[in-house]
Length: 163
Ligand SMILES: [Zn+2]
Image (cartoon, rainbow, N blue to C red):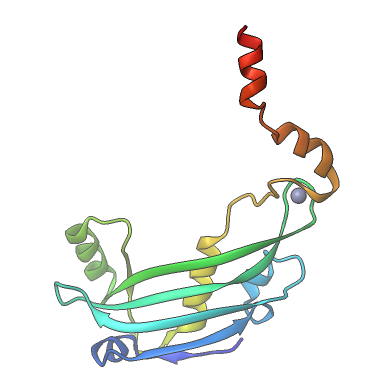
């Protein structure tokens, strides 16, 4: 595990920024979803605060993971491109209060610590971005028949049928 630990509150207060990349093979929970553990996940974190003065981290996570297609069980490359804002609360009660005040599901509130592991934050974000049941649009081994099914009837043949 490539650890990268920040003091979340200081990092936000000082508007610091950091970026890096983790190998998928170093992120054990993400590897478990992957067929071959290949690829890297790039990330960046930018500290700041919202208009109410809540300290926050803007997290962006991107990269490609080879998932397992739930239909044909072959590798399914999935591109992660996720951006999120994490407001820092002092504790669980503070987190609940902030969530109620904001009433906005698009913003996540986390309990900040002086030793926040960015690796697990990035991994959480990547896992959240994954589809529940990944499937190819058209599976490679069933390619031909599925392509035919997916082919829409042309507008001209529809017109012909109307006559
Ligand atoms: Zn498939």
